[in-house]
Image (cartoon, rainbow, N blue to C red; front, side, top):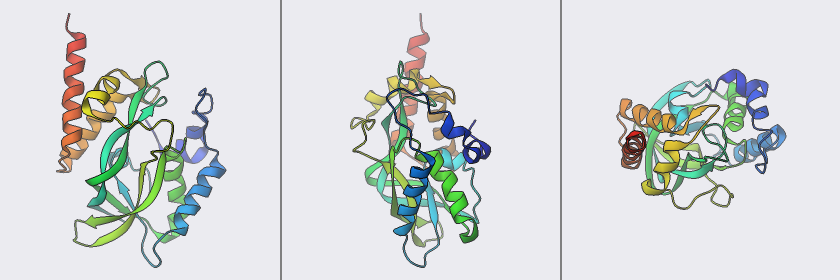
Length: 223
Protein backbone atom coordinates (compact mmCIF):
# COMPACT_ATOMS: atom_id res chain seq x y z
CA UNK A 1 0.00 0.00 0.00
CA UNK A 2 1.22 3.48 -0.85
CA UNK A 3 2.35 5.42 2.23
CA UNK A 4 3.54 8.92 3.05
CA UNK A 5 6.95 7.51 3.96
CA UNK A 6 7.39 5.91 0.52
CA UNK A 7 6.69 9.26 -1.10
CA UNK A 8 8.88 11.37 1.18
CA UNK A 9 11.96 9.12 1.27
CA UNK A 10 12.26 8.65 -2.48
CA UNK A 11 11.51 4.92 -2.29
CA UNK A 12 8.37 5.36 -4.41
CA UNK A 13 10.30 7.04 -7.23
CA UNK A 14 13.09 4.48 -6.99
CA UNK A 15 10.60 1.65 -7.51
CA UNK A 16 9.97 2.86 -11.07
CA UNK A 17 13.60 3.21 -12.17
CA UNK A 18 14.06 -0.18 -13.83
CA UNK A 19 11.13 -0.07 -16.25
CA UNK A 20 12.36 -0.42 -19.85
CA UNK A 21 11.16 2.13 -22.37
CA UNK A 22 9.29 4.18 -19.79
CA UNK A 23 11.46 7.12 -18.67
CA UNK A 24 10.92 8.26 -15.13
CA UNK A 25 10.96 11.94 -14.22
CA UNK A 26 13.70 13.00 -11.80
CA UNK A 27 12.71 14.55 -8.50
CA UNK A 28 14.16 17.83 -9.76
CA UNK A 29 11.89 17.78 -12.81
CA UNK A 30 8.89 16.88 -10.66
CA UNK A 31 9.57 19.77 -8.27
CA UNK A 32 10.08 22.14 -11.20
CA UNK A 33 6.67 21.13 -12.56
CA UNK A 34 5.14 21.90 -9.17
CA UNK A 35 6.66 25.39 -9.09
CA UNK A 36 5.50 26.05 -12.66
CA UNK A 37 1.94 25.21 -11.61
CA UNK A 38 2.18 27.42 -8.54
CA UNK A 39 3.24 30.34 -10.73
CA UNK A 40 -0.24 30.11 -12.28
CA UNK A 41 -1.95 30.17 -8.88
CA UNK A 42 -4.76 32.73 -8.69
CA UNK A 43 -3.40 35.56 -6.59
CA UNK A 44 -4.62 35.67 -3.01
CA UNK A 45 -6.58 32.43 -3.18
CA UNK A 46 -6.14 29.46 -0.86
CA UNK A 47 -4.76 26.33 -2.52
CA UNK A 48 -7.32 23.56 -2.97
CA UNK A 49 -6.57 20.13 -4.44
CA UNK A 50 -9.31 18.19 -6.24
CA UNK A 51 -9.37 14.43 -5.57
CA UNK A 52 -11.22 12.09 -7.92
CA UNK A 53 -9.51 8.72 -7.38
CA UNK A 54 -7.23 7.22 -4.74
CA UNK A 55 -6.60 10.66 -3.23
CA UNK A 56 -10.14 10.41 -1.85
CA UNK A 57 -9.55 7.27 0.23
CA UNK A 58 -5.79 7.57 0.74
CA UNK A 59 -4.84 11.27 0.54
CA UNK A 60 -1.52 10.97 2.42
CA UNK A 61 -1.32 14.73 2.88
CA UNK A 62 -2.04 17.23 5.61
CA UNK A 63 -4.98 19.54 5.00
CA UNK A 64 -7.03 22.01 6.99
CA UNK A 65 -10.39 21.51 5.32
CA UNK A 66 -12.16 18.91 3.19
CA UNK A 67 -15.43 19.26 1.27
CA UNK A 68 -17.24 17.33 -1.40
CA UNK A 69 -16.85 19.21 -4.66
CA UNK A 70 -17.73 19.26 -8.36
CA UNK A 71 -15.05 20.01 -10.94
CA UNK A 72 -16.50 21.65 -14.04
CA UNK A 73 -15.35 20.69 -17.52
CA UNK A 74 -13.71 17.33 -16.76
CA UNK A 75 -14.90 13.74 -16.32
CA UNK A 76 -13.32 10.49 -15.07
CA UNK A 77 -11.74 8.24 -17.67
CA UNK A 78 -9.48 5.18 -17.53
CA UNK A 79 -7.52 6.54 -20.46
CA UNK A 80 -3.85 5.98 -19.55
CA UNK A 81 -2.07 2.75 -20.44
CA UNK A 82 -0.68 1.26 -17.23
CA UNK A 83 2.61 -0.66 -17.17
CA UNK A 84 3.62 -0.32 -13.50
CA UNK A 85 2.07 -0.46 -10.06
CA UNK A 86 -1.14 -2.24 -11.08
CA UNK A 87 -0.08 -3.47 -14.51
CA UNK A 88 2.89 -4.85 -16.45
CA UNK A 89 4.20 -4.74 -20.02
CA UNK A 90 2.86 -8.27 -20.54
CA UNK A 91 -0.57 -7.33 -19.18
CA UNK A 92 -1.03 -3.56 -19.22
CA UNK A 93 -3.94 -2.09 -17.36
CA UNK A 94 -5.61 1.30 -17.39
CA UNK A 95 -4.99 4.23 -15.06
CA UNK A 96 -7.63 6.75 -14.03
CA UNK A 97 -7.40 10.35 -15.22
CA UNK A 98 -9.66 13.23 -16.16
CA UNK A 99 -10.66 13.99 -19.74
CA UNK A 100 -12.14 17.19 -21.09
CA UNK A 101 -15.92 17.53 -21.02
CA UNK A 102 -18.76 17.20 -18.55
CA UNK A 103 -18.03 17.35 -14.83
CA UNK A 104 -16.84 15.12 -12.01
CA UNK A 105 -17.76 14.96 -8.34
CA UNK A 106 -15.04 14.24 -5.81
CA UNK A 107 -13.41 15.79 -2.76
CA UNK A 108 -11.48 19.03 -2.41
CA UNK A 109 -8.72 19.52 0.18
CA UNK A 110 -7.61 22.97 1.33
CA UNK A 111 -3.93 23.06 2.20
CA UNK A 112 -2.32 25.23 4.87
CA UNK A 113 0.00 27.89 3.51
CA UNK A 114 2.75 26.98 5.99
CA UNK A 115 2.83 23.36 4.77
CA UNK A 116 2.08 24.08 1.14
CA UNK A 117 5.38 23.24 -0.58
CA UNK A 118 6.03 20.14 1.52
CA UNK A 119 2.56 18.70 0.97
CA UNK A 120 2.36 19.52 -2.72
CA UNK A 121 5.75 17.96 -3.36
CA UNK A 122 4.39 14.67 -2.00
CA UNK A 123 1.38 14.98 -4.30
CA UNK A 124 3.60 15.74 -7.31
CA UNK A 125 5.87 12.76 -6.60
CA UNK A 126 2.78 10.57 -6.39
CA UNK A 127 1.16 11.82 -9.60
CA UNK A 128 4.02 12.83 -11.91
CA UNK A 129 6.43 9.86 -11.89
CA UNK A 130 6.20 9.59 -15.69
CA UNK A 131 4.60 12.94 -16.51
CA UNK A 132 1.36 11.22 -17.47
CA UNK A 133 -0.79 14.04 -16.13
CA UNK A 134 -1.09 17.76 -16.71
CA UNK A 135 -1.68 19.90 -13.61
CA UNK A 136 -4.36 22.56 -14.11
CA UNK A 137 -6.29 25.10 -12.07
CA UNK A 138 -9.95 24.20 -12.52
CA UNK A 139 -13.22 25.68 -11.35
CA UNK A 140 -14.61 23.70 -8.41
CA UNK A 141 -17.98 24.15 -6.71
CA UNK A 142 -17.76 23.18 -3.05
CA UNK A 143 -20.55 21.66 -0.98
CA UNK A 144 -20.76 25.00 0.86
CA UNK A 145 -21.86 26.64 -2.40
CA UNK A 146 -18.60 28.53 -2.87
CA UNK A 147 -16.75 28.27 -6.18
CA UNK A 148 -12.97 28.13 -5.93
CA UNK A 149 -9.98 27.51 -8.17
CA UNK A 150 -8.44 24.12 -7.48
CA UNK A 151 -5.47 22.11 -8.62
CA UNK A 152 -6.36 18.95 -10.52
CA UNK A 153 -4.34 16.39 -12.46
CA UNK A 154 -5.82 15.71 -15.90
CA UNK A 155 -4.68 13.35 -18.67
CA UNK A 156 -1.85 14.60 -20.85
CA UNK A 157 -3.33 13.69 -24.21
CA UNK A 158 0.07 14.19 -25.90
CA UNK A 159 1.70 11.45 -23.82
CA UNK A 160 2.51 8.16 -25.53
CA UNK A 161 0.55 6.23 -22.90
CA UNK A 162 -2.67 8.17 -23.45
CA UNK A 163 -5.48 6.06 -24.93
CA UNK A 164 -8.24 7.88 -26.79
CA UNK A 165 -10.58 4.88 -26.49
CA UNK A 166 -11.49 4.65 -22.80
CA UNK A 167 -14.91 3.11 -23.33
CA UNK A 168 -16.15 0.36 -21.04
CA UNK A 169 -15.74 -2.15 -23.88
CA UNK A 170 -12.08 -1.22 -24.41
CA UNK A 171 -10.99 -0.78 -20.79
CA UNK A 172 -12.84 -3.56 -18.91
CA UNK A 173 -10.90 -6.60 -20.28
CA UNK A 174 -7.58 -4.89 -19.54
CA UNK A 175 -8.53 -3.84 -16.01
CA UNK A 176 -9.90 -7.31 -15.26
CA UNK A 177 -6.55 -8.99 -16.04
CA UNK A 178 -3.86 -6.49 -15.03
CA UNK A 179 -1.93 -6.48 -11.76
CA UNK A 180 1.42 -5.35 -10.39
CA UNK A 181 3.36 -4.80 -7.18
CA UNK A 182 0.76 -2.34 -5.84
CA UNK A 183 -2.07 -4.84 -6.41
CA UNK A 184 -4.59 -5.56 -9.13
CA UNK A 185 -6.11 -3.04 -11.48
CA UNK A 186 -9.50 -4.62 -10.74
CA UNK A 187 -9.16 -3.93 -7.01
CA UNK A 188 -8.39 -0.27 -7.69
CA UNK A 189 -11.53 0.10 -9.79
CA UNK A 190 -13.72 -1.65 -7.24
CA UNK A 191 -12.23 0.45 -4.42
CA UNK A 192 -13.04 3.55 -6.45
CA UNK A 193 -16.62 2.39 -6.98
CA UNK A 194 -17.04 1.62 -3.26
CA UNK A 195 -15.54 4.95 -2.20
CA UNK A 196 -17.77 6.95 -4.52
CA UNK A 197 -20.81 5.06 -3.24
CA UNK A 198 -19.75 5.69 0.36
CA UNK A 199 -19.55 9.42 -0.35
CA UNK A 200 -22.87 9.48 -2.19
CA UNK A 201 -21.20 10.20 -5.54
CA UNK A 202 -22.85 8.78 -8.66
CA UNK A 203 -20.54 8.19 -11.65
CA UNK A 204 -22.25 6.13 -14.33
CA UNK A 205 -19.03 5.44 -16.22
CA UNK A 206 -17.30 4.00 -13.14
CA UNK A 207 -20.37 1.96 -12.21
CA UNK A 208 -20.71 0.51 -15.71
CA UNK A 209 -16.99 -0.27 -15.88
CA UNK A 210 -17.06 -2.04 -12.50
CA UNK A 211 -20.08 -4.09 -13.58
CA UNK A 212 -18.32 -5.10 -16.80
CA UNK A 213 -15.11 -6.07 -14.98
CA UNK A 214 -17.05 -8.24 -12.53
CA UNK A 215 -18.87 -9.94 -15.40
CA UNK A 216 -15.61 -10.46 -17.29
CA UNK A 217 -13.99 -12.04 -14.24
CA UNK A 218 -16.93 -14.42 -13.78
CA UNK A 219 -16.80 -15.46 -17.46
CA UNK A 220 -13.07 -16.24 -17.29
CA UNK A 221 -13.58 -18.37 -14.15
CA UNK A 222 -16.49 -20.33 -15.62
CA UNK A 223 -15.44 -23.77 -17.01
